[in-house]
Length: 566
Ligand code: ARG
Image (tube, rainbow, N blue to C red; front, side, top):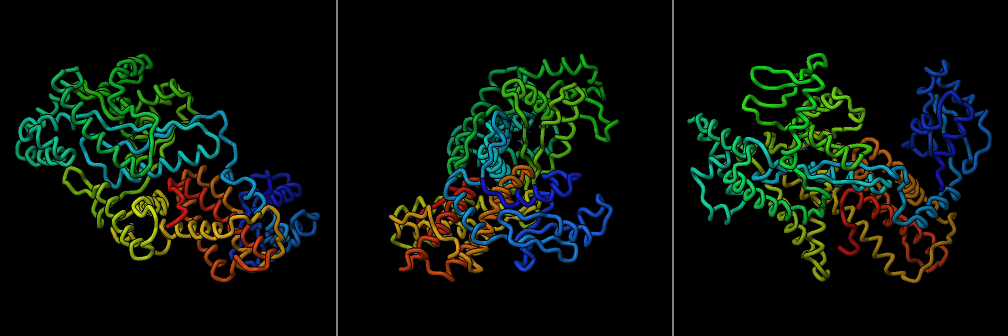
């Protein structure tokens, strides 16, 4: 497998055995200016370890490094060591590798034999699926695809919020102000109206809160009336969630939500007691975490009912037994960071060495014009509305640009939904995002539709030369600035996938796709592809095919379907 960065890292490592090949590999940079070479080693990063000034390090390395395959020139320039590729060789090897590996291009089989549990989406039953859950869903889905691409077995778990006092509230509200027909006709919207009403009324009449608590206590004791209502709310909710998952093309291996752990909690509490971790505090049962600088982890409320953390602890122990995971990853808003730190600590205190394999992947807040979203106040943008609006708008664009397109509706669906996913995965996940229709539906610039258009453009060129064989081409014909730059960008894909995996950061791939699309379009505008000169045509077509493969592989990793015609 061709990897010139690896060749460089090995050669430097040979000169500097005190640093590992991996350490050096991670230090290497792609200079923004081609005059500074194709890859550079910033030697100031080494001066502390080697106790030498960077300029001297660069000079010594330059004179000691022997001839390297693929490298024409090594040049020390003020503390940097710049490597210049042999361009034709580099272009040839890069494109050959992509054309050979096809849909495997970018993957490395590092995950064989390892299982990753990914806990994502996890909306709360009887509440609408909102933009905050969209983030968890698309980030989790993308991470899952990235891990699978690298050979891991993945178990996607939808840890539904289907248990807790809120169902007591909903039952009270339903009994006071609801009826069957309305719920059946309006589904979650009606359940949400009842939920909001409960909170309005409870402010005036706090007794309602007690009633809600007692209904939840009945649920926990297995009361059949309470459970039937709960199951009904759950069925209605799941049916609506499924519509969203179908649109997003997201799938789960398990829907074991919070209620799944009801019969597994006593054992956990028993175990906590035996391990001397449980303490009474004002009638509630807690694990004291003061020593670790955290507030206590509440395990049982005064009335004996369990909590979010209790169910997460039971779930983790269950998952370890059921899947023997290598890592278990939780994708939720950063607001829950403390919750995860607390109960991860409890697992550690229980003596489970695998506590270190539990990973919280937080993301920033989604706000609506700067205000925090809260179901209670009814301030939500429904995901279903966003998706259908995006599809509608895409269809309008297609009608005006390409009215004869076949399967317009289907293309609009993939493009529109993809635009929403793409925009969500474009920012660093920890950044707060303010939801705005204009941004999500902006079809120009750094967006999903732009990358999709570029992919379809590659497909259209390839369709026009159906019989063209590109396995052998003359790389000396791909030496213009645009062609060479595109090759260099394509070359970086495997590294980007690896970075996205280690940093659990899909935005690395999303942004990379925009770079590829921009580089391709610069090339496309400067250089005709299907020219008469057969040699030139073959070489340029090889580049188009390699671009198509890279774009398609990247799009799939962020959960988009690459479109062939738009
Ligand atoms: N239902 C929760 C929410 O909407 C997210 C659950 C995340 N997963 C977990 N195991 N705690 O905030």
